[in-house]
Length: 408
Image 1 (cartoon, helix red, strand yellow):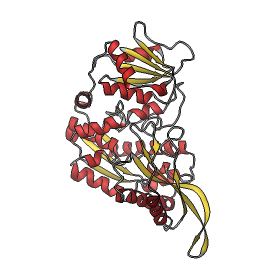
Image 2: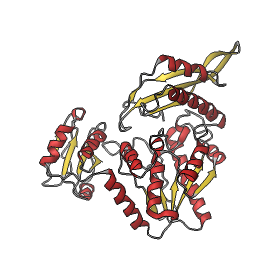
Image 3: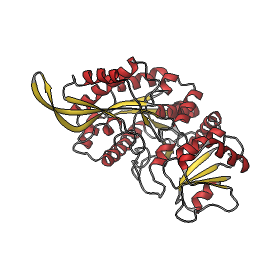
Image 4: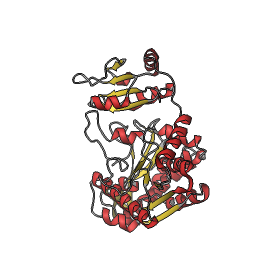
């Protein structure tokens, strides 16, 4: 690959946008935190460096590399970046088609005659990962779907049908609901939830690998925002992603295959289309790796998850019925740990509050809440409050930042 552009992030808010704008120009671009070492920068071998924000001192920039400093990253625009990239002499060489083909070749070369397990959730990231690896090594790929009891309503059945009938892949279905819920019992801290789920995922894969006899690699759908968002510009942890910081230190595989780790969400979808995956699958609702564990605030029990599953299904059904599902980037329900007084069957009740969230975003790095029609929200509210265990519905109108898209 020809020399890329490099973004040194001293701001923490707009690095994703800047990187996507550079990639849209046709030049490959990576993002590193502002405190990245000179050795790490040299590994990238950038042809140009874009500094976002105000460095506290002199950043570790290689000699004789063109540098553009943007003190106010909120004002970053494609024309300024295009002019800088052109003046720096970087060539347009970045395309999803080339990336897909090169990544498939790379997987084939790395894996050789070895075997691979793929962590398959049914979401777009893991599906694109599975199809890409499958095209590289064929039947030496085995997909494992861990049904941890944290899926949306009917989703486990849909995942199994999708993989076996649509893609004709090897699929092992592991019913691990009791195992995961047992580990999560009494755990309310979101970071601990993510760590537990990440650890258990790997342990399940290791066990399934041993049953198969011998498997060398684990494939998973880590994407670039997972990598970037795990650390702030000064290198401190922001939030563990189960595909990144949630991994245990030791796993029983030769290595990890992460074909999407350098792609933003929109690029993952384009890669899926390039691979021939149906549009309805490519544009499927995003779902976090830890599943409903990060949408069930507080203690996680099967009873609470079932309440959340029903509320979430109702909200999504109303969105689809209104014809808004292709206009929204993500929409879902959250079961809070807040109880409030209500009236059910002419008697006092004291049940949970459900929050609804619908957002629009181009990269899932920043997001805007959607002004949904009030009559839609009312219909959803009436159906949701009819679910036993729910007494109140609220609508989340918070942007990202300051909030994240998920509540935990």
